[in-house]
Image 1 (cartoon, helix red, strand yellow):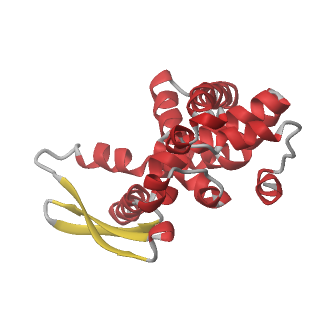
Image 2: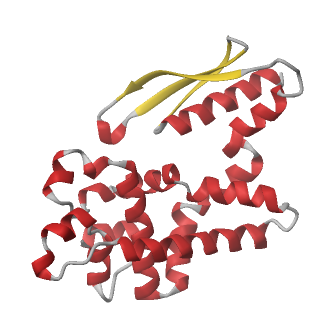
Length: 224
């Protein structure tokens, strides 16, 4: 756990909270006799802490943004794919306690399990060290993408869709061209086409990131 605390840049006073945050329900169910609790309650709390910190940052940093834009940015920053990316940065999968079934079926790299664990870790940090500690983690690992989102490149698919809709009959389509690497560290390459004609391609660590990258390339090409 010390190695993970180093990555988190925080040392727990009550390390039991961190262990709880990394305990999947499958492990808790297999160890009921040991009074083992899953991370589901912490996940619930962490989701609220994360949402509040992100909303607060958007409200204070960007007073000119309308409600709709703030809502889209918040969704983008706290979505499952975003949290999975955080988990990958931390190598969180190797620390999660899983039941035998989940272990054998790839639970250690499953997006939903990793994303939930990130929310649970946020809650554990909040309970152990207070809001400033949780906010510091969120600033480092999640809100670091905020400026990208504000500049428009974080939601390029929406921006591209709005651009092509100005011409009637224009249809965008995305195609996964390739995926390489092991299950825990894949790279995806996607292509976006306009009315069947390729206009951009890009890569990312998830299919969503690859599509966003392709959309950014398409936007750059169309604006030349």
